[in-house]
Length: 496
Image 1 (tube, rainbow, N blue to C red):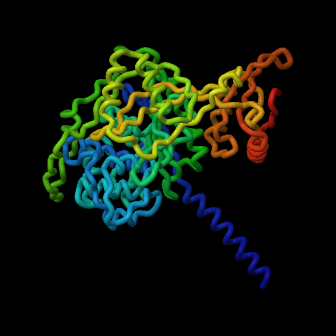
Image 2: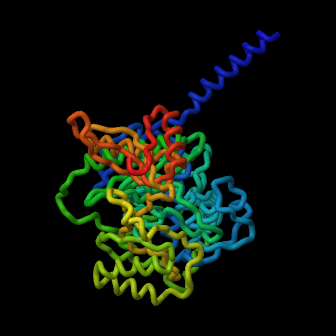
């Protein structure tokens, strides 16, 4: 009897193992030069796969178009339906009967990847999610996404709901160039979605890959871990679409490698220095797919005021030291830095300041320390995009981006420890191992800064790869986790 039970257990284990293999999501990827649309690398790029929440890029594309056409306006309140409120996670937490603005629904869908918000947007545009899915598919065909078909607004697995890495990379590029005033949404680390402040599902890549500014993550059991990412460095911009990651950490690491590949392959010079022309509002609306004959929709009612976002002013890069946790002080520093860049930028900033009627709710605060700069004598500054959050009604904060230098204290208060991952023969190898580790989900390294230090070892110049500015306990925990993953790691105390 025991032997039979043992054999049954072994058989069940084998079946589970092979079933897990068969259900593994296929891998596909495409790397694109965003400026020209040229494909730089592809693998299974035309294989129809489950897109998961990458679907919301099309939901948002059609929402932006509806706003520009006057069918919706950003401060319009939408009543939550039972269908939208019943969507499974990820969710904003909408309740049937409540009302929420289009602005907040857009933020929830773009940043939080909320299924309930995406469904409600689709219903507001097309009357029902089924009708909206038909319009999504028609719009995809109009954009050249020949192998894509949608069955819902959120991306949860459904029969026939399929796309490809090539099509999703194309959609990411169209969002960027067709609706540039809205694109800043995808780079926000968090956003006020009305009910609460929501974190960005892509925050790891945004925080750790230089130049990353979007676009959208996706995950279901059938799809695996998907991501359409974009990054810009100087005159180069690269878009990567990847399907079938095994985890968020391995997906992020692979996307970082693909972005690196793209930047290495994008030419340094083009025939023209001009960036691709941004389509006019009329041209963008003309690109809309025709409504299927079987679909009857009510004519949209024009809003009483213009709801198209204002253009984002151009700001040159410039450093800004954030040395206060006060929101008022922070805004003053941002505006002061912006004004120092150009007179035209100063006028726009002053005008925006005058238009503010009420303070925005639930703004995330950025923390820094006044004495931190003196405590750091090496490369301890990281550069991030900081957005000026506006409360001006009628547009989604197309705020100017400025440069932020955040310094952290590494003195006697327990933040002077570091972890060293090793010494490498080139700076590139050291940067690569630091980036791969930063993209992994290691809570102990949260807030740590990456540092590469050259050193002479046995007559050779080696590059030490370290995370600095953490406590003793965090350093020990991080090394324990990394050692368990067969990654060499040494905890180093202050001054070592």
